[in-house]
Image (cartoon, rainbow, N blue to C red; front, side, top):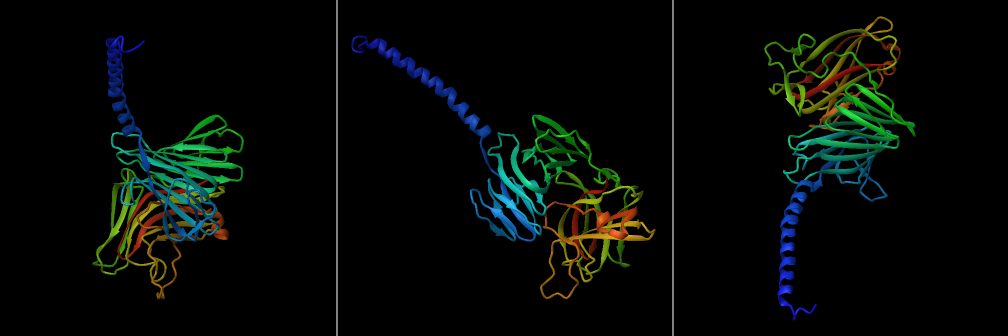
Length: 407
């Protein structure tokens, strides 16, 4: 058609096309903006902090590692490797380290972990989850995730044998030979392998053997501690223990809700330099003969300690555990474990700390070695008591979960 011969038809065609494009753009642009606002994401800020030894860090795309002795940022694709003498923490925040904490991943010795994805929605219009994805090639990690008020956390961890997906809670995942072991301490984990998915709820464990589907969940262990999560009324199961000199202000024991969990806070800030102790004690009175495994598990956060290290005699820590037991020869004994973050001054003549150093202001999940093997010839035959307390001058510490597991 020659447009000069029929200009009206051409005009109508132009008008129709223009109107159609206008309508299309009027619909497409708002939808596109809406889709962007609802789906755009930005990186989560993650940091690796060394707790013991020297950690190897591979930046994204790098073949050669760099040594980490303190703290550094970790971008998506970063890989963290610990040897037989090193341990570290990987922490992820919504923005920077002053923003809400999303996840704490504790790397034990001989562990190889890669952070593959770490993203959070860019805008408040998107109430979707913060996405974290990890790849564990060997070793063991303890993971604690928290759901901030604006974005829940959704994490996926892949191992050579399968994948684990979970939200807020506390989990322990390890690779032992050709098997991946998943333990859920709090929350719910979906374990997928060989086209089969099973769910491990609180207090359950699931194992995956190479090439096979995950096994059905079984109880992880028997916890001898009652109300170890410190929820609701503490007494009469837990009794307060206060030790302080006459006329001096005692330490305070308060039950609170912190970081979406029930905690007990031990605190004292009087600056009088007086030794004191404040804590909780529970009578266990359980025979443990016939079991092969006995471990202490504890989650805590250290906020302040005025006495560096473990004090003059390496016996004062802002969090301590005292397990009173009767050994196989009928003798009553005690096993102690302390935790601190403040080092002794270099010129100090005090006893070197015997406790475990951790990072200040970070939730830490401690699990002891098998106490049956650790205590050797004086192994427990009966657990009598467990006491969790703060010892020193001034301190502030939080305890959230206490377990004495046998299996």
